[in-house]
Amino acid sequence: MGGIFGSIGRRMSGSALLLYSALFFAFIYAPMIIVFTYSFNANPVNMMSWSGFTFDWYRTIFGLSSKLTEQTMYVESTEQLTSAVANSLIVALTTTTVSTLIGTLTALAMARFRFALKTFYRVLVFMPMIIPDIVLGIALLIYFVTIGVKLGLTTIIIGHCTFLGSYVFIVVSARLAGMDQTCEEASADLGASPYQTFRRVTLPLILPGVVGGALLAFIISMDDLVITYFISGVDSTTLPVFIYGMLRRGIKPEINAIASLMILFSLVIASLGLWFRSRSAR
Image (cartoon, rainbow, N blue to C red):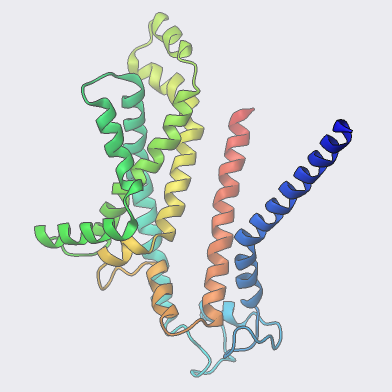
């Protein structure tokens, strides 16, 4: 009897786990599916009332639509949208480069050297990730205003680097923790200099972690709203801040189209990361 009840219990546990997994993924992905679906809704007034399939909202974003009137077109200026996208790319690319360099070097220093207050320094590295975004955004705003720095792309880049370096540090540190140090020791025994060992042994081994951290930093920088909202200037609007400004006047089809494109862009970046990881594992 015990074996029968045990078998029934295992089947029930498996069914409950399957149901939980289905509900979890539905909770995560259902909103994105809804946004993507209604980005093709032809109704220009009520987003939730389906009135036909159209690509007009995507054409509106790129300034290609000739059928829409001023009453139905919600994106005020394609130039403003293009400028916001350009600002986001400039910030993301610059921040990714700087934070990847800082995070990688910090991870190497923490893994390879012993120094005073090492544990305390590690806590400081984690702090930007623990602090709420709104607190960090306000703190950065007060700091920049106090020292007299004009808000713009430079302040956004500095603000993003303050916390994205921590994300890169975690990813690279995880890669270093699983790396066999005997390869580096063998390189040193064979007469290689520290630079040659790093370039030919250490860097190729940790490169998947470095690339993964860089892609993570790029995506987070592109999607950040709260911190960017506080430290951006008049002429340095990024895409998330631009979308937030549109949302304050209601949810319209163009917003769904922009959000769908951002989701697809994120999927492409994630796919590139997985492809690179699979290539490195061979």
